[in-house]
Length: 315
Image (cartoon, rainbow, N blue to C red):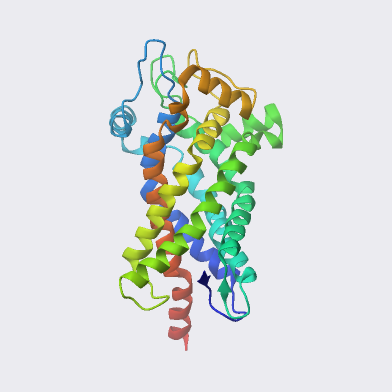
């Protein structure tokens, strides 16, 4: 059982502002790890067991050597642009649903937390699906054997160019390729993450002897980091399938998939069940850092405090 502030005071606009700042901060700090995660998940094992990347660190080294510092942020701009509404929906609507599901005295039962998280995850896929689709094409562009020019340099891709190509070939719905696995991943993730981060934060505050509802940065980061890691691990197979389905430019001898079931089947038959956790360590690290930073910033309520300071200054 957890509680929320009693009463009817709830400003969704301010919550969205806090979430936007949180999302941009989190994705900027975390982006190089996320890029390496995407490339690890897409890198299929060769016929003789050879691997393009040995580990997250090996991928980072090779990417930096081939593409430089800015190559580590390939796809950052579009991801930052779209992460703002995505985090607004995820964090803001979760709080909104919790506010409405809570009792008159502010009490929120565990099933209210589950429902709020699941609904927030379902709502966010409106933005998440095209965001992930574009981000994956940009992040994957430098992978060995994929999207290279004749001279061996990385072919330049832009979010606008990819969007135009998708629209011309598949119409508006082309931007929603991979919608189903994205839905499964995001709903399950949010259903696990939000109740867990709330519980861990409340528990750690109590165990460390702090006052109830007191905000401590290290507690916020730790609870969100752990919750993000657990939720990420629980949905990693869906994320691998989503990434494979949303990768439009295939390397030499790489497989194509007819849908979720076909993708699951082919991955299992040719690469084994461990392939569903390919890039799992890097994804857990990436998501844990992202949510550790984003959730901490969100709970610090930067926009709310800025408004209060401005109002105080004006008066």
